Every structure is written in C-alpha cells, then in structure tokens.
Image (cartoon, rainbow, N blue to C red):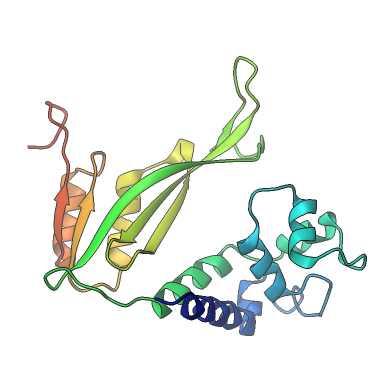
Length: 220
C-alpha cells in the first residue's frame, strides 16, 4: 500500500471523529466547542505524532516555535477533555480503510501476543503503580495485547490492561468475539492455551494454532 494511501486514510479517520467530537468529549456540549489554540483535530494529530520527548519539546516540534501556541499546562487541560474512546474509534476507522483482506488459503492469518508498556509514575493508580526498589524510579506498567494480520501487516485490534489486573485470556476472547473477520487462522504463543479460549475461537468458526506448555501444567 502506498504511503499516500495510508496518510489519506489516517486523515479521513481523524476527520471522522472530529465531525462527531461531542461524542468523544468528557462534557458533551461544553468541551471542544470553541476554536482554541489546541483545537480537537490538532490535539488528536499531535498526540499521534508524539515521539516520547518532553511535552514542551513535542509541542514545539508539532506546532512550531509560534509564541502564541499554548503552554504545556493548557495542552494537558485540553487533552483531559478528550475521552479515550476517541482513539479507539480512530483506530477502528483507520484500520477498516486500509484493510486489503489478503488471505492464506482463504483465511485471514492473525497472530496474538502481548507486550509491557512502562509509563510515567502515578501513585494514585494502584492497579498499575510500582514504587521501585533498590534505587529504581517509580513507574506505572500497562500490558498491551494485540491482534496482528501477518499478510496485511496491520493491527486489527488491541486491549490495554493495567498490569496488576492483567488477564491475557480475557483479552484474547474479547478480541475474537468482537472481530468481524469471518474465516481466520489464529496463531498464539503459550499463556493463551485454555479450553475457554479454544471454545471462543471454535464458536467464531476460526482455525487455530496455539503453542502449549510441554509439561504437566499444559492442557491435554
């Protein structure tokens, strides 16, 4: 797929949620109603473009060195008015536009796996907070489970869980149940082996290839 096509699909997805921004505002009818230094569309675009630097640096990189650009404090306030569902809808809209539905013997070839994501420390969130030991800085930890199309080279779904409440099987069944893919071969590593997971996949009408533990702790 050409980069221009991907870029156009992303811009269309951002515009789609901007057109209904009241649905993704903490206080519909009050938030994101006026044109400000950080309007809704630019807020979404800038968050996607951030690369892990300090907030002040990221704002300058995206918005330029215009002295009239708002402060980092103003940015944080504006960001807090956007619901997380905005980015979930953006993801779904974008991936639907670039989905070429490439098949392997008539099946979508999907893989599932997870990865940890360390974020800034927030002691007010005990479900993901770790105080740090032996001089290590405190941090919060999330776990991201994703479903990936191996032929299309795109993510089709994702589940973000706080690490202390992590449940890989629940994440897998959620992604399987809500998928609109009709026929697929699902590949997964150990930790996804369970009769409940297999039942959800079979009920979906999919095939599966899941690595199992080679000891007595694995299913038989």
